[in-house]
Length: 202
Image 1 (cartoon, rainbow, N blue to C red):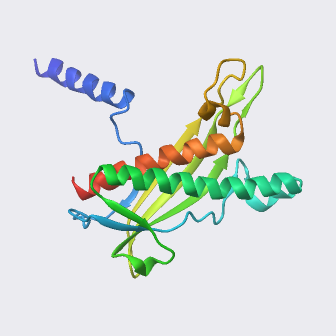
Image 2 (image 1 turned 30 degrees about the horizontal axis):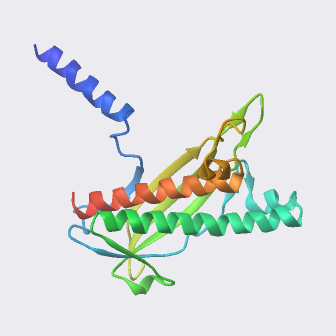
């Protein structure tokens, strides 16, 4: 009987993980006891792209192989990643009763969200094969004086839609690397808001 109960519990846990109920983040470090319980206001710094790698290359080496237009587009894509991430995070947090406000320096709030993007992959679509984009973002939640309390890693992949099918405007955007990255940024922003809610109201 006990063995059957254990197997049933294991299967339920597996089903929950496969259905997306499991946390979609990896905790690197987490303050204990939870200092964020009941906290309803956080500052949000812009995404820091320091030490960014594109697939298997540092950013400067990746850009060295690009022409002026591609270089300009990449700079624009990074700006839109920051915008999509912030918008999705702020909106998602609001749904949980948490106010997140963009700030330019850490001392603007008692707790500050500090996002870092360390890895990006543009993905691609070809008739014979395709590969999804990917963004890996590390979030640090720090006090106003810079002490890091939580550090959590988030990741998202976005596949290219088939251009031969009828596509919505949003799906058409995913035919470009910038569009796929924007979708990744939006998904990560929503996931960060869920993580924040799990710490504010555990």
